[in-house]
Length: 168
Image 1 (cartoon, one colour):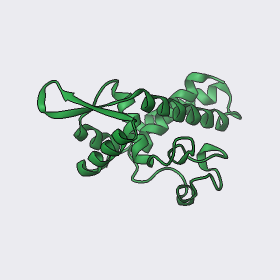
Image 2 (cartoon, rainbow, N blue to C red):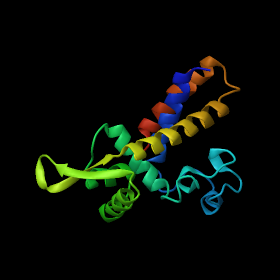
Image 3 (cartoon, rainbow, N blue to C red):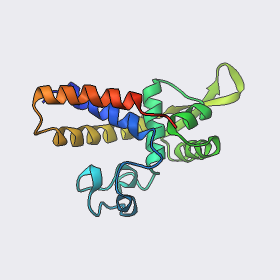
Image 4 (cartoon, rainbow, N blue to C red):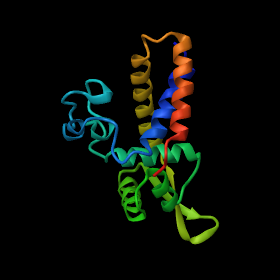
């Protein structure tokens, strides 16, 4: 299977997920943190309910961590709010909780001493890498019955669809 197609599909799904008001799984998956039916993460719990990490948040926190990875640097709380699709007070709470969990750190804004910027810590980076690996594995599993040409075409079409998806 083409790794590139699986990566492109996972990235397109992540872009779509960032534009949705709710996570892309049945509501009962969120209410069974130890993986009742498994949801899109197989038999285990979703990453924000993984007992190895404790219950560290929900899909909004994962979108925030994904946004920080995508930024390849630090973001302001306002930029995080825009990327995650929440208001600024909610983004501020996500950042504060994530600081307390050691997933992100605040640093002074070099352009405005009154503001801070937020960056991933090594622990936060590791958590995102683990989640992305599970997401990629789920995509690869779903694509097993596709030919190489079908995977490539699906990746192209899904990326086009994700890019055209309305932001509001």
